[in-house]
Length: 589
Image (cartoon, one colour):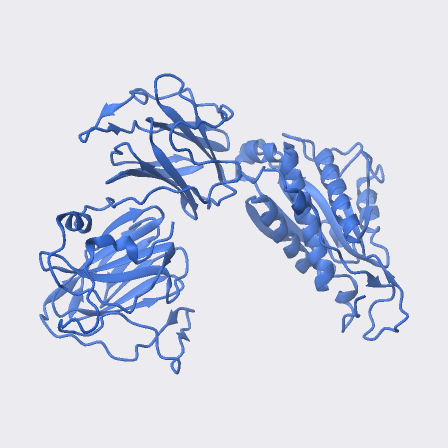
């Protein structure tokens, strides 16, 4: 959803220059002329100096504050009443929007959770701040307009959202004629009541579909708790005041590691699911949605709320971790169990990753140019010999050492991924050396086994990557999910290799990123003499992450992420030779 000037609809009447109306000064802080570039403060917030001071005269005992807010999807609208004589400037920053006020006393206030995209409102000392989870630029993340209602009240309307654009436009809304009754109702609507735009199919996880009308997707796997409805949860349809129906209260099903939310939808209901950094927004068109809220629902659902709109309502599902188009949630439209209500089942878990099949084109890794046989010199003879770059891929554990055992057995998964990585890199021109290609260990002594693996990075080998599966004890198993990459300062380029592997794995899988970890004791890294990293591709102990590890599509994506990370390291100079040579050797053409 992209909110532009049309978001204000016909409720606002715009006057253009030369309309004959008296101009009292432009209330918006504009971008400065080219000769006055934006400046960055010590805190890193971009500010712009207005080219013309803003001055208005009028009543000096006015107050500014008491914001009214509403939500439309992930965007938040904030409305301020402006007394005569009040002037202000708007400054976008990396943490929100600052409103500097003149000609009025700013009412001190601190309001948490003003809206989906406004985490806090703080005012006092002549200034008000709308805090956001994302940075604002001069034109992106926000839009501001003025309007004068039929009652004569002048208002400042600010829309904030990750997809909102416009900033402070170069037009001015001035009083002209009384606005329509419908427009007046929109502007005077109570908090959390906004108009709704038509739903559209976008921003959905691959394989999931927005359904309009009677189209039904295949049933989703049943979750524990789906049939444990609380009393009065399934009361059916309630007649609405406008000839429609009222949406029944949503139902919650809880199971270890994930939470299911079920919406019972009457026939003809249209919906749109929008993921975001704070969770999911489910926009409904059709049934009346009564205002409701419940907090501290489960580890995966910190809060849910229902907000009525003129065409239906919005269900907000707040999650502790971000949701994206590919991760953190799944949705299925289930056929009616009884009666006429279909069931929109939304499963929430930060461990949910992209389990869709890789397209055929994505399974091809771009070629890696051959390396000169002699590296580490600034100049090479024209007759230098070029060879395929060599990397070691280590499938962790094996033989009598199973590694982590949970939803999967670690030694089996690591070997399956290592073989996939080899099959991706070999056609790209990389000589892949596997520490093992079957279920075996290199030595019955564990320390010797690890040293032998690390020692396979012989001269001429550029990179070492060890593949593992994570696990936690049962009492803390639900706290562990996602992918992470470990490195050791054994080589100057080990940290750069780890970063490339982590980024590519997260991009390919959509898995929760646990980031990079530095470890001084991992033998397989410490004993390596070339850039080395150890990737943990998931947690066998977590009920959802364990299902990821059992899915061949997920393993394909993990392998592709590792292969792409290795390729990027090779072509960008993050290699064994680059760590010791002052100048990179010239590559083969």
